[in-house]
Image (cartoon, rainbow, N blue to C red):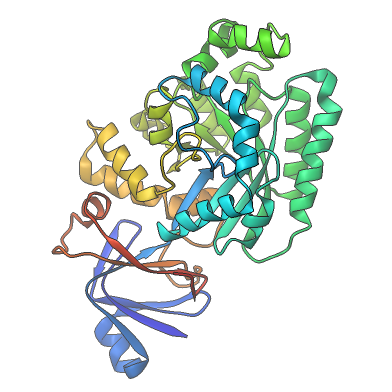
Length: 403
């Protein structure tokens, strides 16, 4: 059993001054420092002035297999970026061995990320993700829109999924990813979701990331028209957006991006009890615009904040991602947005990923950050923690100190 006494605890939008925690693998108690001192005496570890206890951060969407990228890919617009990914895919994947993937995982841990959702296209990141000190929701991705290749594509997907399911450790969750409505044939989607539903697997999918996707799914026109004709000899989208969302009706899903989603699609996402992952830096670098959070709030759709991968970001740091969001969504009330951002990378993310963490309260896993700040603490701490420098002194995952 461990007892930490902090200057402040910040969790779920609530600041508790002069409070501490008692924990082993899970949190046992949250109480005032004076109360804990009186009952536990020298067992208490005094963290001192400027110490803030936070829930461990949760990154719901990251691609690790492209972590070798620094300046190889083309930023500014979605289609040039996608073309550069295809042109450099083999080179980048070959450059990112287990050591490269592990460095990306360690980057997240150093930035306070104690759980993450890894979208794996090839399964090359399985070993590092399995050995990661964090909780990992391991999304095996299904991709392929050619019906003639459906059996082979699904067999490859199954092989990767089953390989991840053969691994057993607490905090490692084999799961399913559907790449996108434009890149996966309906037969494959329905088959994979039937399997996910039957076995209670977590599911994620990209949805409405770019204007090119919007035009292609709606009207079979735009930049994707020549792309699919040249690469796959296809002249029609694999799905409409409406059809795609209908397949997920019984499987609560984490949809990533949704920048171009319309009102009917948001209503369907709400009806299906789905959530949306907001990746502001990735959206900016790929020229896709910005997710309208007010529309999501109007539909009461839970939204999370994620980094995406180093193929469309310069770091795997949720503090940086939250900061970008504060400035991108310039018309939103700053204090309310900062508090919502914190929930999006802690308690809301945990709920969407079905993890028992993200909150500092009894019975939750003791995934904790000890952060040190050098400025006075006041009720605008949610803003200051994002915008001001801070030092992450300790990172605990299920009560075990990892940093």
